[in-house]
Image 1 (cartoon, helix red, strand yellow):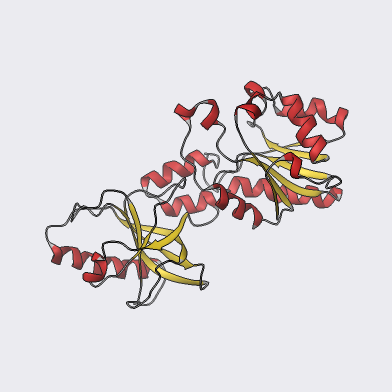
Image 2 (image 1 turned 90 degrees about the horizontal axis):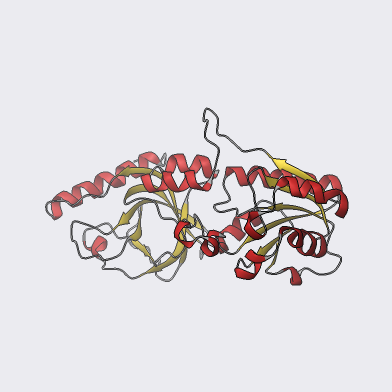
Length: 316
């Protein structure tokens, strides 16, 4: 997938393009349905498939007091979009200048001028341009004039649910620690990525060595607790089954910031320092509590390891 970081980077003659526009935060099941339809539309019209998105939530500029935390980083968003088989993503810098651009100019300069759009796909509630004046109705009005079709993609609902798939729902589930439900809404396991760094080595001293992730910036970490999941080592390509801890380790009360650390099941001498890893959350095992003494903590950690293996379908 090609990534353009401004309309000026799109080479002349790149189009025609079928374009889907959105924030695509999390690249969840609803976004995946939009991208699947985008690929179909592009194939049917002989066009390139292009996602148009933003380098931040527009609310960060328009209403910073109401801007939620991102579900994934921008780099992760681009990676996830690339996995869906589209030709390109145009990542627009959402700043005051873009916020002030009229909806008409957005269509003419970006969609028509840069991308030579043939089909535009948007959600029913998508808004763009100065003061949100751009709507699906406006796109339908401009389409005949500039030679593109407009398709409004229906909301996606999980089987048996009356709530539409959304990034807001994912945040709520992650704040509750319900990573299993969040995985259904995302269409994949929720995850965080970082470099393995040196910690206090307390897990090693207790017989349960952990890989401590560096501080996660601009990614939504699930609620404090213990989880079953996978540590994906990008340096080796190996997926390790793991028991994962999120929080500040209240038993010792000397960790000042939330940490994500993973104990790889069945491994004691694994050296992951400096490795680039992703931690995937599969199931929440328990909340984070303070234990009365080291022995009770060690007993619980042994139980956590057994429970994590069970949750991951491993033989113990």
